[in-house]
Length: 138
Image (cartoon, rainbow, N blue to C red; front, side, top):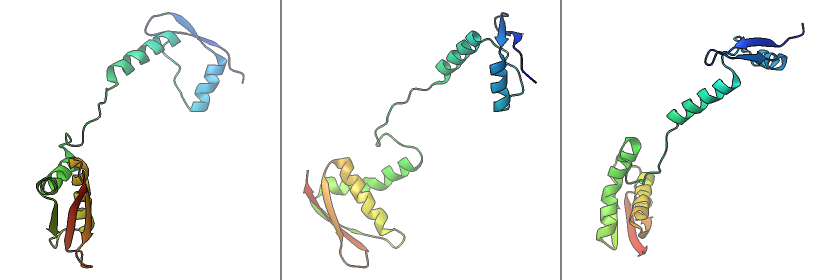
């Protein structure tokens, strides 16, 4: 059965518009069961109005400004490392049983980036219970 153009009335402006055979075929391919309610002009105007109202403007935050979720936990966890780096030239971090060595080393590196001071670190022995660190430059 060949599709024929249909004349529909726009619910917004009341003008008549053509629902062409090609558009009907497209609607059928996409699985749309309803005919369009608005002419192309009203549909475009409605889309522009909706997009203009709901589009949020995003600004990039400094990572020190993040205080929710995991960002807050990381900020709190980094604080003693930041203070240690600012206070001295070298140090020793003893790891508690519940702490993971990789996490402690990562927190030290993040604190280093936050302060802008380069830090080198290494484990005192193979048990990875004591992390030695020292400043290597600014």
